[in-house]
Structures are given as C-alpha cells and as structure tokens.
Length: 356
Length: 217
Image (cartoon, rainbow over all chains, first blue to last red; front, side):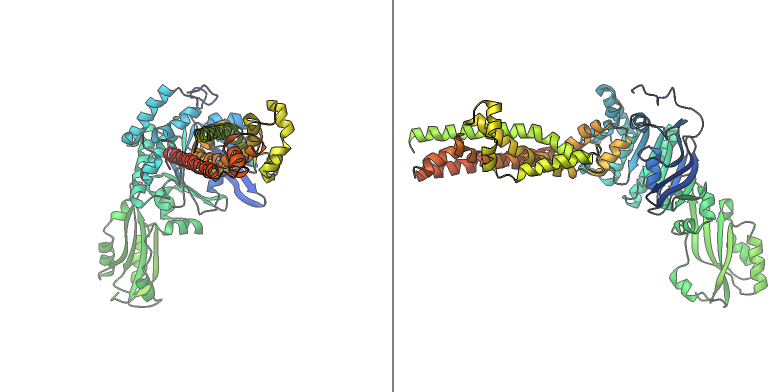
C-alpha cells in the first residue's frame, strides 16, 4: 500500500469512524442536508433510511469528500476532511469502500481486473494485486469467475464483485448506496448475509443507505432516519421499528409490520359484537401465550385475526390483531390494562362482528 | 485489361492505402486526445473548462463545415510548409488529416459520452486522480465505440483521398479521373470502382470484427 497520511499508522485506532458535526449543504435555495450531527462507531452496521430526495446521496458524497458541506465538520477516522483539497482527499477515499445500486463495474474489464482497480489506483504492484484479488474473490465466492466479464454474471454476482472491489484496499468504512435495491429478494438476502459476515469477520464498519426498512431490519444495529435533509429519528433498529416516532418513520416502517387487511377494515365499526385490538410486542413478550392470557381475562375465546412474529436483529417483534370475545367496556379496559406493561403498544381499533 | 493497366491499378490501390492509412493514423493520434479534451472540459466534466471547450468546439465545427475540395486547396501554403510540396501523396496527407481529425474527434466524443457516468463516480470515490480516470475508465470503456468510429473515419478518408487525386495526389481516384473519365476508358472506371468497393468492404469488416472482439458488454 502506498505510504500516505491516511495509512494505518497515522489513523486514529479509537473513537468513531465517522463524526459529523452540524453538517449543512444546500443546492441553490434547496436544502439537501440541514444541521446533521451523527457518529458512526467502529465496527457497527448502521442503517441510513429515507425516501428518495431525503438527502441520502448528498450525505454519502459529503462523507467521501465528493461534495463539500457549506457548514459543519466531517471527521473520518479522526481526520477532519472538511477543508482538504482534492489531492489530499484521494488517499482518504481509497480507504472508504463503496458499493452501488447499479454495481458500476467496468464492462470492458474482467472480474479480476475490476477488483484490482482500487489497488492499481493506490499504486500497488501487479504481483501483490493478483494475490489480493484471488483472496477477495474467494471471500465473496467467485473464485471461478475471475476471468469472466461483468456481462456474463447475474446481478447478485455483480454485486459480489462490487463488494470484493470495495474491500480490496482494506477500507476503514464501507458505504453501501442502495446496494440491494436492484436485486430480487433472495439475492438481497445473500448479499446482506455476505455484508453481515464481512462486518463480523473483518470488523468492518458499514453504512447502509437504503429506502427499504427490510434491509435495515435484517442487518443494521442502529438506524438514522433522514427526511428533508434532517435526521428525524435515531436509535437501535428494534426500538425504532417497534415504536417509530415521526410520521415518516411510521410510513417507512409500515410496510414491514402487518396492517389490517381490506376485508377486516371494511367490517370495522365503532360499535359491534367484539372489540378489535392491535397489540405490538418486542423481545420475550412477543412469544408469550397472549391469546390464552386474554381468554382467561375475558372468559371467552380471543381470536387472532391477523399479524405475526418477525425478527429484528435476532429480537422477536410481533404485531397481532386480536378480536376479543366481547365488546364489554370494563372487560376491554381490563385487557388493555393487563397488556400495557408487556406491550410496546396496545390499541382498540374498533369493533367487528363475531363471524369475521 | 492490359498488364500496364493492372500495374496502374495496383499502384493506385497502394497509394490510396498509404494516404488513407497515414492520415487515418494521424487523425487517430490527434483526434482521440481532442475528443477527450472536448468531453472532459464540458460543464460538469472532470476537467471542466467551459471557455476552452467552446473554443475547441468552435474550431472543430468550423473545420468540419468546410467542404473537403475547398480545404484541399485552402491549406496548400501550410502543406508546402510542412512537406515542401503541394502535389503527390505526402502533400495530400496534410489536408486529409486536417479534415479527418475533427471528424473522428466528434465521433469518439460520442463514444465517450456513452460511458456510464456511474463508472466515473465510482472511480472518483475510489480515490482515482482525474488522469487515472481518463486512463483506466474513459479510454478502455469507450474503446469498442472508438474503434467503430475510427472505421467510419477510414472509409470516409478513402472517399476523400479520391478527391485528393484530382489535385495530382495519385491513388485510385487519380486513376479513375485521368483514365476512366478524361480518356473515356470505362473498363478502368469500373475496375477502380470495384477495387474501391472491395477495399471499403474489407476495412469495414475488419473494423466491425475488431470492435466486436474488444466489446465485452
């Protein structure tokens, strides 16, 4: 590796990999980022989620110095890059790996040549490059594709090449820009598994930029929610999923949690035979025999009409739509009072007939 | 056809190949950098320089709008300066190169434009310098298109070199004019046209084959 100011010896070995302090960027009178303050800890996988136009792409470009904020500081691995010139930024960019939605592989180069490109840029000798490329292709499971061209590969394989290329210069940070958005669900899972393995085995810090909460749910420990250039919510994924605060977060999360199907919604009324409850549970509470517990309280059978138990970072996360056997106010109040300490949310949605 | 005519035809073919080949090679060497400058200096390019881009673009457009037969005569003083004479094959190479360079530059520029912008972004994000982006991304990725464009340029040069024959540059065009046209030897005219067709077919076929072989997209 070329001797630069950004090599292992000079880099801070402790402290956050990324520290943003009051970063703002506007294009004309359109604010893209507004007063962003955030840190990314060494070795974590952090999700950055937001709708398109929320400022995700600008934030990435600010992180690798392709764009400059008008206010605030950007510190990467202890080095303030805010005021560095192009030449000084280049060695830093070499240590920030990046993978892309559309892979961005060179079409006229083989898989091995693509993976070798960052090493070539860093000035590494051909023999050392070859050795490293083979290691990396082995790591991503494409050792037999070294001499093929990207056009001969599937989308998932292309992204594996992208990952191998991003890992080549031994990065301190991996930026994933919607890396699974162009892939089918099965391939998405295998790519996310690979990223999780890279994070675990190499201790590599990963920032996952996405508009899909599913991606964040599967591998990120912490999530930042970006909306109109501001971080509107931040915290452990399980917490944000279970009890999203803002409307944007709620709508981003809504696709993941079950919602009431149309036929039930059509028969939901303010009054009726049976009260319909929505109950959200996380952690061990999600696995309690909740129907039996309610039945015992009401003295009649409770019915599970919709919902299920999912998984967030190994934590169970449940949402149930339960019809009580009764509409009696006192009994319903007793049930909600009983569930309150267990659940992250309990809500009486309305009433449904006994035959739905 | 007499053996003498056959000799003339062979000589003419060789002269055409030399004129096309030398001016083609020169326009490749001059035109590709010109295309790179035109592409990279435009607004948003990696060497953004709008003023330089406008000036070069203007010169290229001006040269391309002059009819070749006019250019041929207009550059005679320059030709004399460079090769010492205004007639013959080496004299024809000067105007041919001047005409073909901006032509090829524009075609190569189109191929550069077809390189995915995402690749340039990816290379920048990898910490590549601008020159590295030109060398490792722009040129190799656009190469198949550039080769196709160069083939088109060569075929155009064959036609233009025939016109250069009109001012005594030799080659197949000269042969067709002196024997076929001025002496009404229809046989020579037909022979020249057939040889030209075969020459152009061969060049186009070779160019297509090379571009296909190089393209892994």
